[in-house]
Amino acid sequence: MGILPRLSTEASGVILALVGALLFSTKAVIVKLAYQYEVDSVTLLFLRMLFALPFYLITLLTLTSDRRKSLSKISSKHWWGLLAAGILGYYLSSLLDFVGLQYIDASVERLILFIYPTFVAIIAYFFLRERINRVQGIALAVSYLGLIFVFMPNLGHISVTEDFWKGALLIVACAFTFAAFFVLTQWLVKPFGAKAFTALSMTSACLIVCLHFCLAAEANFQFSSIASEVYIYALIMAVFATVLPSYLVNMAIARLGATRMAIISSVGPFSTLTLAYFFLGETLAPEQIFGALFIVVGVTIISVERKRAKKTPS
Image 1 (cartoon, rainbow, N blue to C red):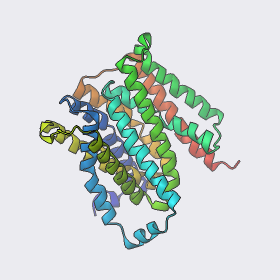
Image 2: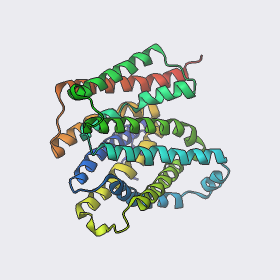
Image 3: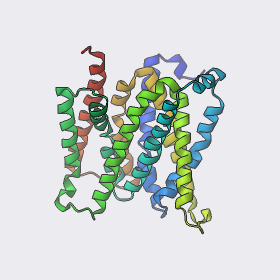
């Protein structure tokens, strides 16, 4: 039966959440390692999704007959929502992330991307009419103050032509599209189920990425021109930074809830910082480390407060 079934639901959930967060945190470092072999972002994203696609197709093929019947009864608006979620969360967000990583360090990317829960709160305020209370407002301010500290070493030369600011804006856009995906997920997971939703949304995203690559690739493109190391990194990223964590996180949420999962996922930025230091030689300035603490604290408070506010009767 393995180790997890003998553990309590809470203990197994913590382990799943921690492992999932740590695996997700490796993605940016793997992308930067692959970029050392002169591969473009679209090709690398295509290889990642191509290697991940079979795993999600196998999941769909192994769905129970009852689950398949329930999927056939889901309304068309939910199916269109799932397609939108796949485009926003795993195609557009991934594309913006991969392109942004061409310009900025993996450690800075992870810190910027980690602010996505603040965008979730803002989107929910404008489109779902969820109030932002005083604690959440302070936490938002703390998070963005931390982001200013992260940007501080580059504030002296702000220019749209600077590579850092190109990358930073792309990663901010990535965080926003992922936040929109997260809002959609809360609406879609219940009718589809976590397992089917993950497999279906990822499959749609994989197919869209493949279509993008076919349209963008040059007519004389040769796969043999890609370094073998890129294929290895893409496979590692597909299995260990895409497929495995996507399922582990969903399993953890089922055991712990989204709020506790969000708290545990705060190890992600620090994991990326550590990996980037050892594998890429990246370091953060003291003010950036200070900003990282602000971001993690602010985002964690926002995640907890949004859940608490939903439980409190108005």
